[in-house]
Image 1 (cartoon, rainbow, N blue to C red):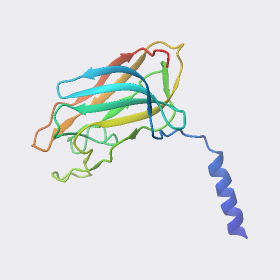
Image 2: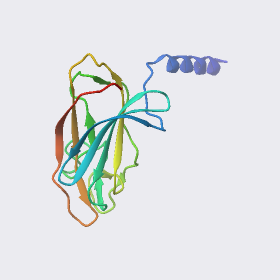
Image 3: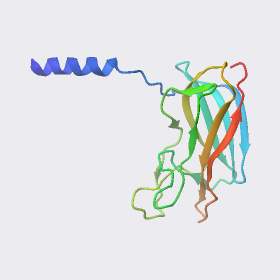
Image 4: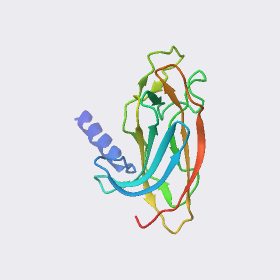
Length: 175
């Protein structure tokens, strides 16, 4: 009987917490906000709507060469043992968008099998990766600043310079 009471209490407490929005496929593109071109990758920023009617800020990081891969969003900012840099999508200050949930990636990161590091150096498979952040809109606020970070490496044994906290300013349309 006591176990049943504890289970009911745990269930009630778990259901009383704040609701966290997590993006859910499929996604409908509402607006392409900006395309950022760097030497080795192109990043497209979009507003999307997911299957739960949540607004999503999406960033697709598209390497310009098919053998290049990105590092996991979950890497430390300085990489692992100084290697790699995380793929990030950040809202550094209040603006037209406010994050309301965790960022998800459309690819699964796995340890780089070619390197020995003190902790796993997580990489995405070669090719594009999309990060999605659930957001709320406030069109009354000024333009939105977004920071992009990423680093690309190749299965051919070379890496590009890291792009760290590249500022991008967007103005939302009538999404």
